[in-house]
Image 1 (cartoon, one colour):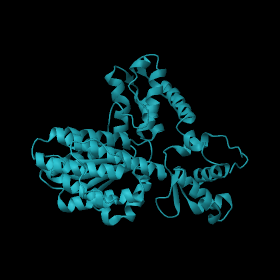
Image 2 (tube, one colour):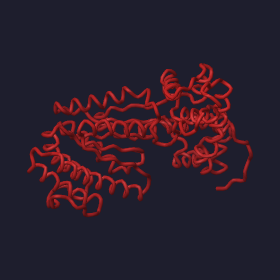
Image 3 (cartoon, helix red, strand yellow):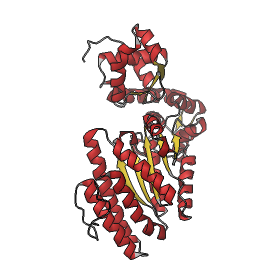
Image 4 (cartoon, helix red, strand yellow):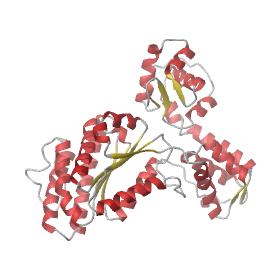
Length: 397
């Protein structure tokens, strides 16, 4: 079939042709919008899960939906480290400034309140982003300029609440890779969401991150109670079948049931892999009927592509010692393994493996959601490792 018509789109954050299996999260945010119009704030939403499950795609869809409903939004993508902290604050400052400009142009009601709010926006942007941004009001002298992010964000939201409410709008901050936010900014967002819920301010934090985010939120449970927290995992069998079959059927192609079963089974319901295999199968198919033989060939081609780019981006950053640890994980548990079992398999005490384990966690390759167990942050990483030649390289630490 013609590659130019290929409907499948593997890629980080790239929207698939069919966004399936996520309607409950979409409905929850729609309900959030409806309640905000009645001046009721029950809190924000946080999504967590492995890479490749479509968190970013869903987050982007939710942002588009609330913007269509009249909300003003700010978007952040967190990054680790000191440099990441600076970038996050600059993005927040610039994003809030853009929100202020939107309010000035859109909100014709309560014009004086809007001017007051924009003055606070100017002050907040200058303080947080460390730069002066041109707005339609001078920076407020005594609001949102303490230099303490939690205080400044609360004052900003308090001053925006009036004009937002009177215009049936709200401010939503969307944060991707939320696990990489520095603790001060993360705490500020959680605390101000808590305050907004208590005060019925139209302010919402909607974030997404890896499974490690769940532990971070648990440590801040006094604030996390103000959030709907949802795990985004593999699609159900029915949704996975629809994700593969419907885009092809819409273009006149026909999947044999056995072909669909092979693709869905190999992908284990993970959207990124469904798109990868679907794309490869489409490109290999000589005509519009796709049978099991073509599906098997497409899966092999898809795995070859994954083994060249997606998985090596993590595997190639490990040392020889860390690879021994990862192979032991796969041998004793597959995707999730007991740290005690890994140590027994390698014939050492568990404490001897702590440096390798911690390094792998720091690199974002594994995570420890519960005590005594580690899991891969990327689905199907265990299958990739099994496909790699088991050669004992010299330790490159």
